[in-house]
Length: 263
Image (cartoon, rainbow, N blue to C red; front, side, top):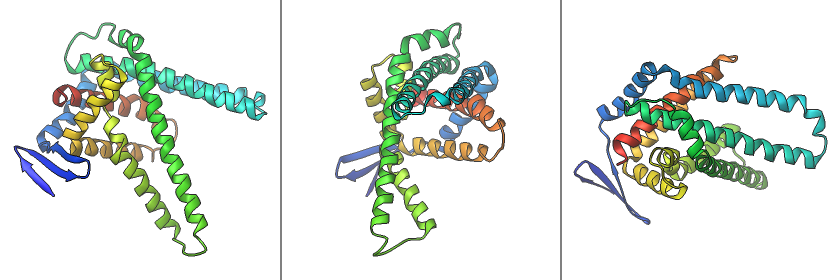
């Protein structure tokens, strides 16, 4: 049951009243439009994403060259764990710097050494948030695995078509993302932008998403659609677009979202 109150909606649930604001279309459109403007106004913001892409490319080639050394289970496990830590560490460093850079751009302040100062100061906290996201997405994979095992176990009693199975799997993934993971969307941006601890950043993110849930979900869906459409492009161009355009644009939009609506 919905209740309108001064531009807000309230959903009464078992977990208490869930109050969120219905963002005006103009506000929502301006977030995206200003993000695009910021990207064209400060085009150098694309470089951190491109650097991360080059790192991923080089790191994957490195793994391919030394693959012959990974012939045993222990070495494979060690390589996987080490690779994840390195990737999250580098990702935490670059994304922390990119957030710091985006904060300066959105506020129209001098960027100077914003990237490196932010990266050096917040990379570990950002790394911890990325680990949390990794845990959640692995929980999604675990849920899908258990769902698949369940469907196989009951296939003798009843069965579903491949298309229905895909739809159910997508529904499970959507419930995870829209019901849980979405509330952590702005954790990095609060942790870095407001110099908060990981726990405080998560709480602030949860509060903002609760208040602006429709807008947050809409932005997430738009981002998913953009990445999906870009993925239709073949070759290395898709990676250049994702890391050089989509990534910095997303950070600019989310940073502006926090600055304008998260206080």
